[in-house]
Image 1 (cartoon, helix red, strand yellow):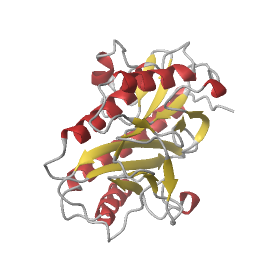
Image 2: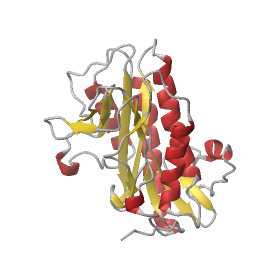
Image 3: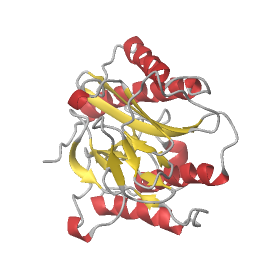
Length: 278
C-alpha cells in the first residue's frame, strides 16, 4: 500500500528534510583530505542532536552509523569508520536522513575531496544529479511511476559516453516511498522495466525519495562481508544523488532542498508548491 500524506504530515516531513539539508551542508564542509568517514558521521550526529531530531539510519537493520559514506567504487551503504581517511582526489557520496515527530527525510549527494579530479568523474556526478532533477520534474499529477524512471534513464542515455565507454545505471538499488517510515512502497527503478509495468498513478500526497546511482562502467553490484557496503563489480567509481519529494495539488515540494527545489525545477518549466513551513 502507498501511504498518502496530509498537508500537515508533509509539513512535518519538510521539517525533517531541512535537518537533512543541514547535515549535507555540514558534512560537505567537513569532507576534506585527512578527515575520516567517522569524523563526518560525528558531524552529522551533532546536527541531528542540535535540531532535536532523531536519526533514521542509526540502528536501521543494525546499521551502526547516522550517515552512509560511500567512497569511490562504493555505490551505497558505506559504513563510516576510523580507517577510511579521505584523500585528495577521492569522490564520496553521503546519504543522510532524519526523523521529526515520526516523519522521515532522506537525501544523498556526491562530493569531491580536494582537487585534481578527472573530467569524467566531474561529469559522472553532474549527469547523475541532473538525471535526479529530470526524474523530479516528471513527478507530476496524472503521471505514473514509470514516467519518473523513464525521465531518469532517458536523461542519462542522452549524454555523451564517458571515456570508460558507458554509464552503468545501478540495477539492484533505487528510489522508494517515504513518510512514517524511511523505506516504503513503491520501489522506484532508475530505468524502465517492462516487467514492472507503469506503476502507481501520481496523486496529491504521494511522497518519494528519488535517487539515481550511476557508475562509470557496470550496472552490477556486490555486497561486501560487512553485509552493508555495496561496490561495483568492476571497480569503477560511482555517484549517488537523492532528494525526498512530496506531490501536492499545487505541484511538487523538494522536501530536502533548502528552496524546495524551486531554482532547479524552473529550468524544467516546473513550478514548486509553496513551502509548507512558510
